[in-house]
Length: 447
Ligand SMILES: Cc1cc2nc3c(=O)[nH]c(=O)nc-3n(C[C@H](O)[C@H](O)[C@H](O)COP(=O)(O)OP(=O)(O)OC[C@H]3O[C@@H](n4cnc5c(N)ncnc54)[C@H](O)[C@@H]3O)c2cc1C
Image (tube, rainbow, N blue to C red; front, side, top):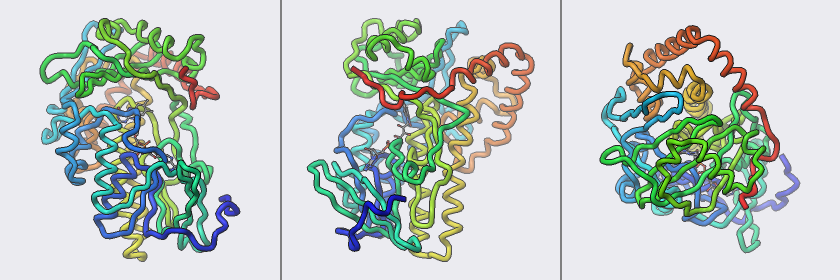
C-alpha cells in the first residue's frame, strides 16, 4: 500500500462509511447505509447522467428496486422485457424464452434501460436517503492506518482541488476501474474466459410486435455473439461480444469494423436494414477478471470492483445491486456489533462468490455447439427448462429450489457432449485459442 502518498495527520472530512463509485453498486449501498443511520459519503468521478454500457436488467432486479423505493421511477424510463430470444445461424429456427415460465412465476418481467437514466435514479435516491454525493471527484489514493481502525482516502475534484476523507469503513464500488483491487494487486485475469466488446445505438431497428418487443435477442455468429436491446425511446442498443484477438486484428477504424461484423450476422443485419447508427461506437476488451478477496477488516468490494465475467446473461447490474444489499448488511454489523463482524463478512464473502460461480458455468459453455443445441431445443425433463429460466432471470440468491434441476441440466449437457464428442472437443480446443490474452485491448481507440 503506498502510504507515503497521504501524509496529512488529520483528514479534511470524516464519515462512518466512504463509498468510491456511484454506479448501481455504490448508489444502492449508500442509500441502504444512510437509511440504517450511518454517516455516509459517496465519491463519483463522473457527473450523472453519464453513459454506461449494460442496459438489460433481469427480473431479479425488480425486488431490489422495490426495496430501494425506486420501482415507479425505473418503470417510467424502462422498456418492459418479458423474455429473451436466441438466434443461431446453425439452426433453422429462433428460440424464445419467457420469464413467466421460470420456476418462480411471480416476477415475469424486467426492464431494458438507458444506464444514464437508470444510474441517475439510483444516485439521486442515495442523496434523497441522506448520503452526501460528491460528483466529479475521483478517489486517487488510500491509506489504512495501523490496526485497520480507519482508512484515509485522497480524492481530486475536476477543478484540481484535492481533499481527504477519513472513514471507519471503506467500500470500493468503482466498477471495472477496480480501485482497491489494483492497489492490493488482488485483481487477476480470468484464466478460463476472455472476451471483448464493441457497441453502438441504432434508430429504426426492426422490433418484434406485442409483448416480444422488449425481448433481448442474442444472435450467435462465427466470432461470438451480438446483443439487441430495445430501449423505451425507440433506440436499440446493439453490441458484439467477440474474442479479443478478433478485435485486435481489425484493420479498419472501430466504426467500420463494427458495421463489417454486423454484416457477418445476416439475421441481425436484416433487423437493422433501415436503421441508422446514431451514437459513437464504443469498445472495451479483456474484461473477464476477479479479485482474490472480497473484503478486509474495514473495507469491502462490491459489483464489478470485485469481479466481472461476461455480459451474456445480463447479470452485471443485478449482481452489483445484490452485492450492495449484502455489503450494507455486513458493514452495518461491523460498525454496530464488532464481535459479529467476522461472521457477517464471511456471509458477505459467500454471497459475492455465489453469483460469478453459478453464471460462469453457463458463460464458459454458451458458445459451445452442445450448449447451443440445448438452448435451441429446450425440454422440461426434471424441470430443467424452468430452472434454466430461473438462472436467466437471475433468481439464484433466494429460496427457489432450482439446484437439483440445474444439476440435472449439467448432467444432460455432459451426456450430450459425450454423444457429440468430436464437435465438442474441437470446440473446446478452439475456445482455448479464442480466449488467449491479447495485450492493449482494454482501452480501444474508437476514432
Ligand atoms: C460490453 C458490456 C455489456 C454489458 N451488458 C450488460 C447488460 O446488458 N446487463 C447488465 O446487467 N450488465 C451488463 N454489463 C455489466 C454492467 O455494466 C456492470 O456489471 C455494472 O455496471 C456494474 O455496476 P457497478 O456499480 O459495480 O460498476 P459501474 O456501473 O461501472 O459503476 C462504477 C462507478 O464508479 C465510478 N468510479 C470509478 N473509479 C472511480 C474513482 N477512482 N473515484 C470515484 N468514482 C469512480 C465510475 O465513474 C462509475 O460511475 C455489461 C458490461 C459490459 C462490459
